[in-house]
Image 1 (tube, rainbow, N blue to C red):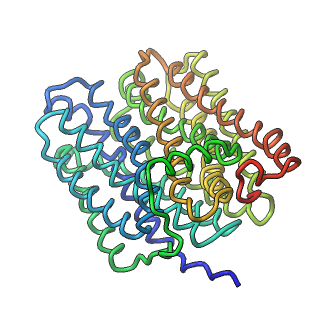
Image 2 (cartoon, helix red, strand yellow):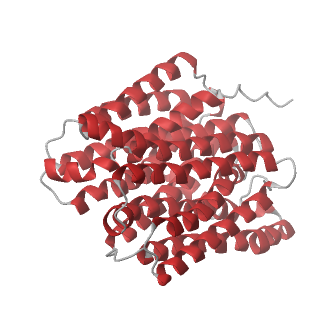
Length: 413
C-alpha cells in the first residue's frame, strides 16, 4: 500500500518565501545612478548587479537542490533565508562595488533556496493539475516581486538612500524566516533522502539533461522568461534616457508589466479545467513570439514613445505568465520524487542562467532606440516558441510511441 503524501506547505507561506527573493532581485534599480556615484564606479558596472544576481542564482541551485534531497527541505530553506538576511545587511554597508557584487552573490545563494526547494516541496506533496495550480501561485509570487520592487525601491531611494532598499529586503527576509521556523513542516521523509556524492550527483544531472521532455519544458520557461530580463536591463536606458520618461512614471511602467504576468497566471488556473496544461503552454508560447515580433517591428519603425514598447512587451509577458508555472510542474512530473530537488535545481539553472546571459547581451548593446531591446526580446521569445513546438509536435509524440521510461521519463506528465 503506497504511503500517503506529506502535508503540503501553505500557499501563503510559499508565496512569501518566493516574494522575498524576487523583491531583492531589482528593488535597488531606481538607485543605480546613486550606487555608481557613491561607490565611485560607472553606471554600466552598477547595472551588472542584475546579471550577478541571476548568475549566482543559477549556480547556487545546482548545489542547494541536492542538499535538500540529502538533508530535507526545511533545514535548507531555514539556512538559505538566514544567509539571505545577513547578505542583505552587508549590501547596505559595502564600501565599494566589488564588495557589493560579492554580497549580491551571497544574497542570491540564500534567496534561491526558497525557489528551488519550494518547487521541490510541491513535487513532494502533489502532482498533475494540483501541482500545476500550486506552481502557478509560485509563478504569481515571481511576478509580483519584480513588479512591486522598483516601485517601493523608488520611494525608499528618494527618502532614505539606496542603502535602505537592502535594509528593506533584510527586514522582509527576517519576517519570512520567523514564519518558516514557526509553520513550515518537512515534506521529504528521512527514508526518501539520498546521501549525496559528487559522481552520483553528476550522473543524475546527466540523466536529467538526457530527458528531452524535462529539458524541453525547462527551456520554454527559460526562454520565455528571458523577455523580462531584457526588459529590466534595457528599459531604464530606453525610457529614462532616450524617451525622457519622468522617474515617477518609470516606476509605474516597471510595475504594470509584471502585474500583467500575474493576471496571466490567474488566467492559466482558470483554464485548467477546460483544456490540457500542454495546450495552455502552447497558447502562451504563441503570445510570447507574437510580442517579440511586434517589438522588433516597432524598433525598426523607430517609435519614440513608450506605449508601443509597453504593448509589445505586455503581449510577450502575458504569454510567459501562461507557461511559467505549468512548465515547471510538467517538467518535475517527469522525474521520481527522490530527485525532485536536483531536477528543480537543474531547471532553475537553465532559467536563471539564460536570464543572466540575455541580461549581459542586452546590457552590452548600445541603445540608440528601442530596436536593440526589440532584437533581444525577439531572440528569446523565438527560442521559447521554437522549443514549445518541437516538444509538443515532435519530441513528446515520438517518445509516446517509443515508451517514455526508455528515455528516463518518470511519467508522461
